[in-house]
Amino acid sequence: MGFKEWQSVCEALASGQQTVILRKGGIHEGREGFSFAHQSFFLFPTRFHATGDQVKADAPVVEVLPEWQKGDPIAITHFVKAEWARTLTDWDEVKQWDSQHVYSEQTVRDRFDWEGKGMSKGSIHVAKVQVYALAQPWVFPYEARYGGCRSWVALDAPPEGWEAGLRQVTACMSSLP
Image (tube, rainbow, N blue to C red):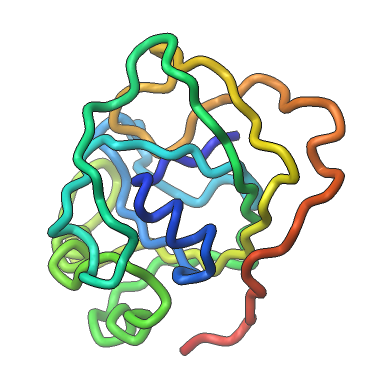
């Protein structure tokens, strides 16, 4: 599976600047809404909805570009394992994770306050993750099936031997902040 995330956030995860993923879900998540349905996945960088004011000033630079077009080369460079995931419903608890991500406080607040698609207002999903760099980028052409406002996309089988040479970028700690 591929997990779609803003390209700048993928870069923050890849550099170890971010160790959690906060998610509310997209409009195409289905009737049940978003969940961290997969314990391991590839980071699928997207430009969809990304603007510079949605991340902190010290985050990787957001270059506002159009979303990928059919045939554009997509490079998958990182694999993620979620150590745990839960839904937070207390804003003070959500704020405790601030040092673990690059999303701006307003972006997190907007997600926390959003209601719809199986998610109630005053909640957000958080997953504590371990990130691994692939030894070689997995490059393939963008297809229409990867588009839309959804978090999970089914990918074709990765190249043979892709697990060889994985390098851990971030070490996950089980404890809460």
